[in-house]
Image (cartoon, rainbow, N blue to C red; front, side, top):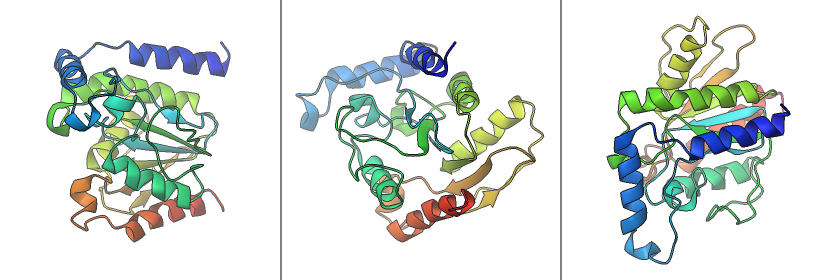
Length: 229
């Protein structure tokens, strides 16, 4: 199978997934009820596939789609405050073609970077259960295998970091227990992609000053350095 066919097949499999009854019920309930500001939208209401440059050298791993963000628009980190913060930083670092992400057909393209998550369905209170994450990690594993040029992974938040490590272990890599900290970087093993940790660009973090634009910009500057640029 050609790489592009493998990507299309994986995307179709993700979108059709109904493995987790609680998440299926919640994402579809949100899509039916909608937020007042988005009453005119036809919500996506399905699992959200990865997005970006499939030839990219950097993989970004987030937590899960936002109920009225990616669960509405159908594209990772698109249509909510986290995405506004993220794509502005990616644009400034040269990884995105524009600083805004509003819907799937807004013209945004990523360069040398692919965005995914440990959980593909919007969870209640933004908190997927451990079993729901485990059920979903197989999709992230497939994406990692398909990213033939992958050199490094940027993990947005502790849950993304811990589950990326768990995924490595499940794939047979002897990864030790690494500590999550903002801007911490690790080389887990020879021939394995480096890991770079960052606080998640949630409004809870960005509006309280725990994650500033300067701090986030440093993450993407580090990624450029690790790519040899």
